[in-house]
Length: 205
Image 1: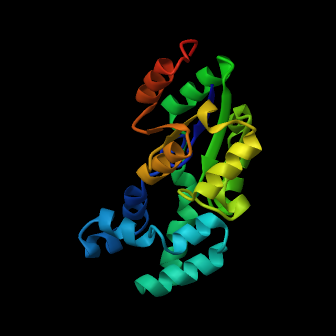
Image 2: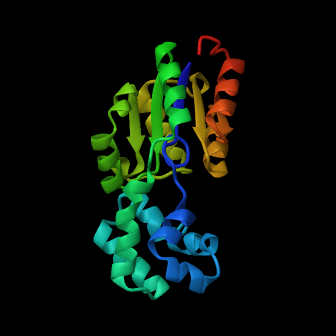
């Protein structure tokens, strides 16, 4: 079995609304809540996606978001710079990674991750050495749910789609994986993922 994990919201904590409320409480209060403001800041399909893709550097991202939201560059930079501290390992997921690795299964990651954050995670977290290989979106200028990114990752990992189990917390990414023939599940927590792996034949976990 080869198990492929997303990072943000799966291996690492990702709570954009909490992040904004912590860093810019006045903005959140003025907007009437953090959830809608987070959706506007980390715009799906917009400039943040281009940051994930590796098409924008941090300076260009800050400039675009500041212009789009009519905020100061300093406010935007504060949030962008606070992201690495938000990306804390999820203990239950890390324990699952260890069990997958110790059971002899292939362990991989496929993550939409801007280059500065990817570099930070690799530098700060020794457990990433447990992975046999992985792909960050910013390394290859493609992002999920683009099927081309999945194909690239599978080719790099040298595994067939049917030989891979993929976990992600974003439904469109799971749908793409399934369309390509991968076994895939929407992430809820490590316990549910472990149950799914056992059902698929990973009883040695």
